[in-house]
Length: 426
Image 1: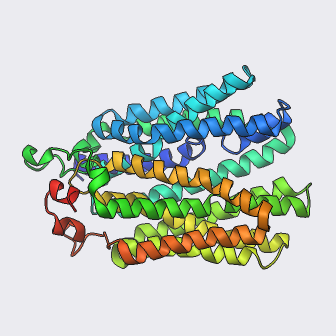
Image 2: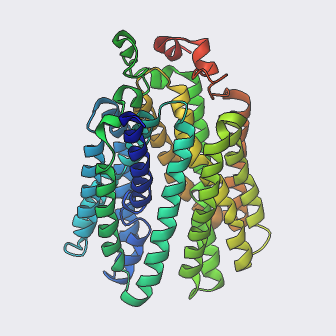
Image 3: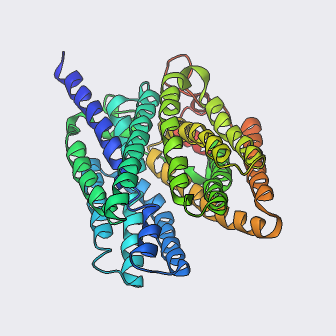
């Protein structure tokens, strides 16, 4: 076996571990922040909501610059390590400085650093395995990510019962250390940094390696259509789980938190095989088909939630979230890579579209809350489902199939516009 093959094997194993351990680090305290501030620091709900809004806004603002930075730097491993350290340190300072503004600033910094992980991991994956194996590698990434999330949630839920909510800080620290070791284990020489940003790679003429202008983000029509579909997906999806949690809490306040944990855990376990399926079959069956399936799941979930308030039924329907979100997480970077092939703007495009999806997610809970107040939970679920159905229609009629054709590594979109400037004009 050649040294290059050994280096790639090591890189793949290290990527598996990095995705597993970063699953808990990339979101910082995540949903546990509100629980800790409410139960341990005795904050009121309004202050908690304000802090979480500030943190979310900081993440939205940082998304596109983060993608641009990943495109331009060759220090991608160091970037992930710095982001992991910032997220961890910012979160661990919370018990020491529990005032409103220290918490707001620290969580804003943590969210801004956390947005670095998705484009950086996708870029390193593309730079290690290349275009032909990228779909399978992303499916593998998502499988290990969801497995890490499920394990962390299980450990946090079990140990918090005995030691209290503060156990999440220790868990975050342990996972951060493991993630640093995993990222450092990725051999630097295994990453083709030109390929990692969506260019041809180090093997071709350097004259072909000039990145397109940033105007491609606003002038590539298929990329804009995909951004609209992604925004509609999250405008529909983001509020569904919180609404289910509220319905469960109304049924039994004592079991509300436990049932919410069950919803999250079962969905994560379903996401693992879905991500594996995307990695194994998307290049054969079509990238657009998988994205359509993820969109179609949401109207079905919305309709099924209205049929019963039974706890077992609501948790059971939540399994569909694992299908839809598992597919979406795995197919998203694959389609962005398709649409930005040979432009050198893969990661900044990821950042820009994630910004759009974050705005959709932020608006989702506000919209759902207004509908619940005016017309009830069933109307809210149906409204969210209708939004996803509109996204399905846009995707079906307007987005072209993006996968590579005939094993040549060139998508239908790129064949229409063979140069990066041609894509930008599309």
